[in-house]
Length: 295
Image (cartoon, rainbow, N blue to C red):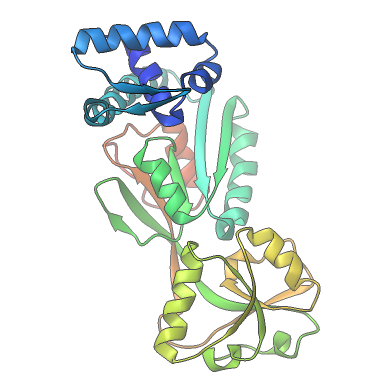
């Protein structure tokens, strides 16, 4: 059993298609098929059911997949540890982030890249749930989001700072000059909101339910930047965390008063995965005073 075969198997399982997997891996389909067949022969069970142009994991394949991922991940961890014995002038980082923490990430990127220009960085935007899925699959070095601080089976999240739930309005709006507003003030406002599935939407709905407030949702969007563009027309308002508002000088964030209106921004690390020195250094640029230990 070779690591190459395991990588081929994992990619084929992700895509459910040998042709797509081979293209991503930059090998021929026949090579991928041959290597997976050799792996199946060694294990003594089929890992895929071949259905027309698609492939579907068998029960054995589903059971074997997490072990394959774990084995490949540990191999990559070993390579990173050896690389880190030298320096962190080269390598790569893959970072996940929710829109509300984009500004924080941008500032850290500028400082980090100036000091370590040889390290390639890939940024993955997404909802908190999407990013946690990537963390669980070991596809991110860390993620910035609003998931609660703490430890789960797949990740450990450390606090960064707190941000307050706010009404986002155009500077000419009646509420733009207010120091804060109440949840009751949201009733009757024409709102554009993130679609269900965004953690901020779930948080807002919880706040409204507990306050007994019903709001008018005119438009739902799965793109926060587009949502802010609509608010910038002065026709609508929205509700986001205060940190979500940047690069829009004509908009104002008006904090919503009340209990438990703050959410904690966190940095989440995958469990049992080697933390690259470059990732820990980058975390320092995010303002982490207590950097995570290895393990």
